[in-house]
Image (cartoon, rainbow, N blue to C red):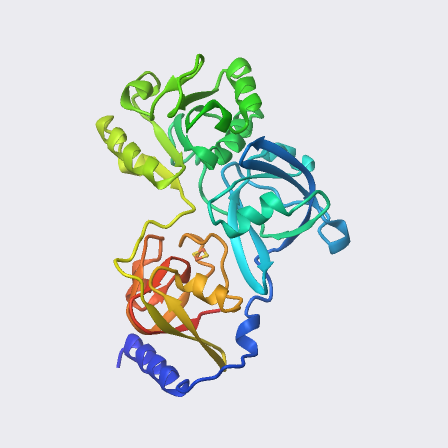
Amino acid sequence: MTKIDDLKKERKSIVDTYSGKRVKDTYIDGVIKNFQDVQYVKIKEIIEETSDTKSFILEPDYDKGTKELASFRAGQYISLKMFIDGAYTTRAYSLSSAPSRINKGYRITIKRVPDGLVSNIMLDQIKVGDGLTISRPMGDFGYNKIRDEKNVIGIAGGSGITPFMALAYAVQDKLEDFNLTVFYSVKTEEDIIFKKEIEHFNKHSKKVKFVITLTREEKDGYLNGHINKEMMEPYIKEFNTVLMCGPKALYKTMNEILGEFNIPRKCVHYENFFLDYEPTEEKTYELKVIMKNDFKIIKCKSNETLLVSMEKAGIKAPSLCRVGICGYCRSVILDGKIKMVGGNMEKALSENDYIHPCITYPESDIVLRLDI
Ligand code: FES
């Protein structure tokens, strides 16, 4: 019998053992004991960037034991942890401040999302002095001098500008050495986040340039329309690295344009905090979550990830990036049919039923074992 056969046998016995229904749970609700190098911070300042976007400057919360903020590389994000109406959830936000000026605090910048649970709380309820719990900085988005070319083209839409501000400061402060041109697409001049900082870079920096295009109005000083081949042509060199951060519609158009420039896929890198999936019909299934010697049975919907279903049911399941990249939520499907959307799960693991619940939708009743 192979190792895999043994594993399958063991999993089958777990499913058999946890039959029946248990309503009251103990261990499973408290899975998260620590939150990957947790940092306790306080809101030092809130800056109104546009009518629907605010920046939050975060400083260490000494009273809670965080003496200094962890350093970060330009392009990284932190995961914000919140308890809302008795349920636990996380959200990832790129750091938009200068990595070399960590003593001034982290800056995260949040745009209102229609029906956005966390973004609306941050924009409407959080005030200066409030405490937050965040992870250490994480993620691979950004400049990698071994991998990347010296000519870096940034493509940003809406609040996707945030990691590029950190990259621009990293170049300005000589932490990184490359030429950065950022194409920034927004609806109107009113929607430009970090307008003054962008103007400052455009005026004073030899290595950083922002090209802003307005898609819903024409104004002097800006390009007009969606980012297109003609706008980009003057900035494309023989060898380029492209970094993209924005809404999914932007990625689709940009991939076509980059194809016309013959920029190889391996030179294009994405930061995305969204999932590109819509099930054909909405159904409700049963999700059995097993952890150590405990289990809980909850409902899950075909249009919600298993992570979201667990959070709504009050299970403190692990999560950080919520887009299948960090691996922190890794779990095992013991039974049921699923649809996993994107992510970077290793082939060997996915072939052996490991999944990332943050990017997994149910297509039947599910038995899931939290693998931590
Ligand atoms: S939370 Fe990062 S992979 Fe699921």
